[in-house]
Image (cartoon, rainbow, N blue to C red; front, side):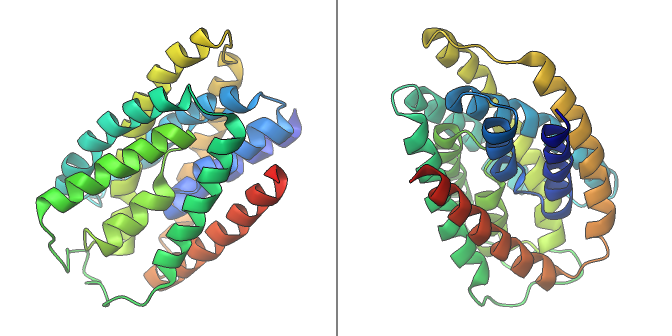
Amino acid sequence: MILPWIGALLVGLSLGLMGSGGSILTVPVLIYLAGEQEKVAIAESLGIVGAISLAGFIPYAFKKQVHWRSVILFGLPGMVGTYGGAIIAGYVSGTFQLMLFAAVMLIAAVMMFRDKKEMNQSGGVSIQHAWWKIVLEGLVVGVLTGLVGVGGGFLIVPALVLLGGLPMHLAVGTSLAIIAMKSFSGFFKYIEVLENLNLSMNWELIFIFSLIGAVGSLVGKTVGAKISNNNLKKGFAVFLVLMGGYIIIMNI
Protein backbone atom coordinates (compact mmCIF):
# COMPACT_ATOMS: atom_id res chain seq x y z
CA MET A 1 0.00 0.00 0.00
CA ILE A 2 3.04 2.30 -0.12
CA LEU A 3 2.17 3.76 -3.54
CA PRO A 4 -1.29 5.04 -2.49
CA TRP A 5 0.27 6.76 0.52
CA ILE A 6 2.87 8.45 -1.67
CA GLY A 7 -0.02 9.57 -3.84
CA ALA A 8 -1.78 10.94 -0.77
CA LEU A 9 1.30 13.03 0.06
CA LEU A 10 1.37 14.42 -3.50
CA VAL A 11 -2.33 15.30 -3.25
CA GLY A 12 -1.66 17.33 -0.11
CA LEU A 13 1.36 19.06 -1.65
CA SER A 14 -0.74 20.03 -4.66
CA LEU A 15 -3.53 21.49 -2.56
CA GLY A 16 -1.17 23.37 -0.25
CA LEU A 17 0.97 24.71 -3.10
CA MET A 18 -1.72 25.73 -5.60
CA GLY A 19 -5.04 25.53 -3.75
CA SER A 20 -6.19 22.93 -6.27
CA GLY A 21 -5.16 19.83 -8.18
CA GLY A 22 -5.75 17.48 -5.26
CA SER A 23 -8.70 15.71 -6.83
CA ILE A 24 -6.87 15.49 -10.12
CA LEU A 25 -4.43 13.20 -8.34
CA THR A 26 -6.80 11.63 -5.83
CA VAL A 27 -9.14 9.93 -8.30
CA PRO A 28 -6.36 8.28 -10.39
CA VAL A 29 -4.50 7.22 -7.24
CA LEU A 30 -7.59 5.58 -5.75
CA ILE A 31 -8.46 3.82 -9.01
CA TYR A 32 -5.07 2.77 -10.35
CA LEU A 33 -3.03 2.37 -7.15
CA ALA A 34 -5.59 1.51 -4.45
CA GLY A 35 -7.80 -0.57 -6.76
CA GLU A 36 -11.06 1.22 -5.99
CA GLN A 37 -14.07 1.04 -8.33
CA GLU A 38 -14.57 4.23 -10.36
CA LYS A 39 -17.68 5.61 -8.69
CA VAL A 40 -16.43 4.63 -5.24
CA ALA A 41 -13.11 6.38 -5.91
CA ILE A 42 -14.94 9.50 -7.08
CA ALA A 43 -17.03 9.56 -3.91
CA GLU A 44 -14.04 8.87 -1.64
CA SER A 45 -12.04 11.61 -3.33
CA LEU A 46 -14.59 14.23 -2.26
CA GLY A 47 -14.28 13.25 1.41
CA ILE A 48 -10.48 13.10 1.21
CA VAL A 49 -10.02 16.38 -0.63
CA GLY A 50 -12.54 18.08 1.64
CA ALA A 51 -10.57 17.03 4.73
CA ILE A 52 -7.18 17.94 3.25
CA SER A 53 -8.47 21.29 1.99
CA LEU A 54 -9.85 22.12 5.43
CA ALA A 55 -6.46 21.37 7.00
CA GLY A 56 -4.63 23.39 4.35
CA PHE A 57 -7.03 26.30 4.72
CA ILE A 58 -6.26 26.88 8.42
CA PRO A 59 -2.77 28.50 7.95
CA TYR A 60 -4.18 30.84 5.29
CA ALA A 61 -7.00 31.85 7.63
CA PHE A 62 -4.56 32.70 10.44
CA LYS A 63 -2.51 34.83 8.03
CA LYS A 64 -5.68 36.54 6.74
CA GLN A 65 -5.07 35.28 3.20
CA VAL A 66 -8.73 34.42 2.59
CA HIS A 67 -11.22 36.62 0.74
CA TRP A 68 -14.40 35.93 2.72
CA ARG A 69 -16.73 37.71 0.32
CA SER A 70 -15.73 35.23 -2.38
CA VAL A 71 -16.07 32.32 0.05
CA ILE A 72 -19.71 33.27 0.68
CA LEU A 73 -20.67 34.30 -2.85
CA PHE A 74 -18.89 31.38 -4.51
CA GLY A 75 -18.95 28.70 -1.82
CA LEU A 76 -22.61 28.61 -0.76
CA PRO A 77 -24.04 28.37 -4.30
CA GLY A 78 -21.26 25.88 -5.02
CA MET A 79 -22.50 23.61 -2.22
CA VAL A 80 -25.99 23.62 -3.71
CA GLY A 81 -24.63 22.92 -7.19
CA THR A 82 -22.37 20.12 -5.95
CA TYR A 83 -25.26 18.40 -4.20
CA GLY A 84 -27.28 18.53 -7.42
CA GLY A 85 -24.32 17.34 -9.49
CA ALA A 86 -23.90 14.33 -7.20
CA ILE A 87 -27.52 13.39 -7.86
CA ILE A 88 -26.92 13.52 -11.63
CA ALA A 89 -23.77 11.40 -11.19
CA GLY A 90 -25.91 8.48 -10.12
CA TYR A 91 -27.28 8.23 -13.66
CA VAL A 92 -24.08 8.38 -15.73
CA SER A 93 -21.10 6.03 -16.09
CA GLY A 94 -17.80 6.47 -14.27
CA THR A 95 -15.92 6.64 -17.56
CA PHE A 96 -18.12 9.49 -18.76
CA GLN A 97 -17.44 11.35 -15.52
CA LEU A 98 -13.67 10.98 -15.86
CA MET A 99 -13.64 12.04 -19.52
CA LEU A 100 -15.73 15.11 -18.70
CA PHE A 101 -13.38 15.80 -15.81
CA ALA A 102 -10.34 15.75 -18.15
CA ALA A 103 -12.03 18.03 -20.69
CA VAL A 104 -12.85 20.63 -18.05
CA MET A 105 -9.25 20.49 -16.81
CA LEU A 106 -7.93 21.36 -20.26
CA ILE A 107 -10.36 24.30 -20.55
CA ALA A 108 -9.19 25.59 -17.16
CA ALA A 109 -5.55 25.31 -18.31
CA VAL A 110 -6.31 27.50 -21.33
CA MET A 111 -7.93 30.07 -19.03
CA MET A 112 -4.81 30.22 -16.87
CA PHE A 113 -2.45 30.55 -19.85
CA ARG A 114 -4.31 33.58 -21.23
CA ASP A 115 -2.67 36.94 -20.60
CA LYS A 116 -4.63 39.02 -18.10
CA LYS A 117 -4.18 42.37 -16.45
CA GLU A 118 -1.54 42.21 -13.69
CA MET A 119 -3.07 41.63 -10.28
CA ASN A 120 -2.46 43.82 -7.29
CA GLN A 121 0.60 42.35 -5.57
CA SER A 122 -0.26 43.83 -2.16
CA GLY A 123 -2.88 41.13 -1.62
CA GLY A 124 -5.90 43.30 -2.33
CA VAL A 125 -8.49 42.80 -5.03
CA SER A 126 -7.66 44.47 -8.36
CA ILE A 127 -11.01 43.92 -10.08
CA GLN A 128 -14.55 43.87 -8.64
CA HIS A 129 -17.14 42.00 -10.69
CA ALA A 130 -20.89 41.96 -10.07
CA TRP A 131 -21.80 39.70 -7.17
CA TRP A 132 -24.33 37.74 -9.23
CA LYS A 133 -21.63 36.72 -11.71
CA ILE A 134 -19.61 35.14 -8.90
CA VAL A 135 -22.73 33.41 -7.52
CA LEU A 136 -23.59 32.02 -10.96
CA GLU A 137 -20.01 30.85 -11.49
CA GLY A 138 -20.06 29.12 -8.10
CA LEU A 139 -23.30 27.33 -8.93
CA VAL A 140 -22.05 26.12 -12.33
CA VAL A 141 -18.69 24.98 -10.96
CA GLY A 142 -20.56 23.26 -8.12
CA VAL A 143 -22.65 21.20 -10.54
CA LEU A 144 -19.51 20.11 -12.39
CA THR A 145 -17.81 19.34 -9.08
CA GLY A 146 -20.61 17.03 -8.02
CA LEU A 147 -20.89 15.45 -11.45
CA VAL A 148 -17.22 14.57 -11.90
CA GLY A 149 -16.59 14.01 -8.19
CA VAL A 150 -13.71 16.40 -7.57
CA GLY A 151 -13.10 19.41 -5.35
CA GLY A 152 -13.04 21.71 -8.37
CA GLY A 153 -9.98 23.76 -7.43
CA PHE A 154 -8.80 23.62 -11.04
CA LEU A 155 -11.88 25.70 -11.90
CA ILE A 156 -12.18 27.71 -8.69
CA VAL A 157 -8.68 29.20 -8.79
CA PRO A 158 -9.00 30.50 -12.39
CA ALA A 159 -12.49 31.83 -11.59
CA LEU A 160 -11.26 33.67 -8.50
CA VAL A 161 -8.28 35.12 -10.38
CA LEU A 162 -10.00 36.00 -13.66
CA LEU A 163 -13.59 36.71 -12.53
CA GLY A 164 -13.13 37.59 -8.88
CA GLY A 165 -9.96 39.60 -9.53
CA LEU A 166 -7.93 38.03 -6.72
CA PRO A 167 -4.12 37.75 -6.74
CA MET A 168 -2.91 34.16 -6.91
CA HIS A 169 -1.84 33.72 -3.28
CA LEU A 170 -5.15 35.13 -1.98
CA ALA A 171 -7.05 32.93 -4.44
CA VAL A 172 -5.30 29.82 -3.09
CA GLY A 173 -6.47 30.28 0.51
CA THR A 174 -9.97 31.23 -0.62
CA SER A 175 -10.09 28.24 -2.95
CA LEU A 176 -9.24 25.82 -0.13
CA ALA A 177 -12.19 27.06 1.94
CA ILE A 178 -14.57 26.75 -1.00
CA ILE A 179 -13.24 23.29 -1.94
CA ALA A 180 -13.84 22.02 1.60
CA MET A 181 -17.41 23.35 1.65
CA LYS A 182 -18.35 21.92 -1.73
CA SER A 183 -16.53 18.62 -1.29
CA PHE A 184 -18.31 17.76 1.95
CA SER A 185 -21.66 18.70 0.39
CA GLY A 186 -21.10 16.31 -2.51
CA PHE A 187 -19.54 13.62 -0.31
CA PHE A 188 -22.60 13.27 1.92
CA LYS A 189 -24.87 13.00 -1.11
CA TYR A 190 -22.59 10.35 -2.64
CA ILE A 191 -23.12 8.13 0.42
CA GLU A 192 -26.76 7.84 -0.62
CA VAL A 193 -25.88 7.48 -4.31
CA LEU A 194 -23.52 4.56 -3.60
CA GLU A 195 -26.06 2.86 -1.35
CA ASN A 196 -28.55 2.91 -4.22
CA LEU A 197 -25.90 1.23 -6.42
CA ASN A 198 -25.07 -1.36 -3.70
CA LEU A 199 -21.57 0.09 -3.29
CA SER A 200 -19.75 1.27 -0.17
CA MET A 201 -16.69 3.34 0.71
CA ASN A 202 -13.47 2.24 2.42
CA TRP A 203 -13.53 4.48 5.51
CA GLU A 204 -10.09 3.38 6.73
CA LEU A 205 -8.58 4.34 3.38
CA ILE A 206 -10.31 7.72 3.50
CA PHE A 207 -9.00 8.44 7.02
CA ILE A 208 -5.36 7.48 6.39
CA PHE A 209 -5.28 9.14 2.97
CA SER A 210 -6.70 12.35 4.47
CA LEU A 211 -4.21 12.35 7.34
CA ILE A 212 -1.17 11.95 5.08
CA GLY A 213 -2.56 14.49 2.61
CA ALA A 214 -3.11 17.03 5.38
CA VAL A 215 0.57 16.85 6.31
CA GLY A 216 1.48 17.31 2.65
CA SER A 217 -0.78 20.37 2.36
CA LEU A 218 1.06 22.10 5.22
CA VAL A 219 4.40 21.42 3.51
CA GLY A 220 2.97 22.70 0.23
CA LYS A 221 1.84 25.91 1.93
CA THR A 222 5.39 26.57 3.14
CA VAL A 223 6.91 25.93 -0.28
CA GLY A 224 4.25 27.96 -2.09
CA ALA A 225 5.07 31.07 -0.06
CA LYS A 226 8.50 31.14 -1.75
CA ILE A 227 7.20 30.98 -5.33
CA SER A 228 6.00 34.01 -7.35
CA ASN A 229 2.38 34.46 -8.41
CA ASN A 230 3.28 34.18 -12.09
CA ASN A 231 5.23 30.95 -11.63
CA LEU A 232 2.39 29.43 -9.64
CA LYS A 233 -0.12 30.36 -12.34
CA LYS A 234 1.94 28.99 -15.25
CA GLY A 235 2.99 25.88 -13.36
CA PHE A 236 -0.62 25.23 -12.45
CA ALA A 237 -1.69 25.44 -16.11
CA VAL A 238 1.04 23.03 -17.26
CA PHE A 239 0.03 20.62 -14.50
CA LEU A 240 -3.58 20.66 -15.72
CA VAL A 241 -2.58 19.92 -19.32
CA LEU A 242 -0.40 16.96 -18.32
CA MET A 243 -2.94 15.40 -15.98
CA GLY A 244 -5.86 16.04 -18.35
CA GLY A 245 -4.03 14.29 -21.17
CA TYR A 246 -3.12 11.38 -18.92
CA ILE A 247 -6.72 10.80 -17.83
CA ILE A 248 -7.98 10.94 -21.43
CA ILE A 249 -5.38 8.39 -22.53
CA MET A 250 -6.22 6.06 -19.63
CA ASN A 251 -9.93 6.12 -20.51
CA ILE A 252 -9.81 5.75 -24.30
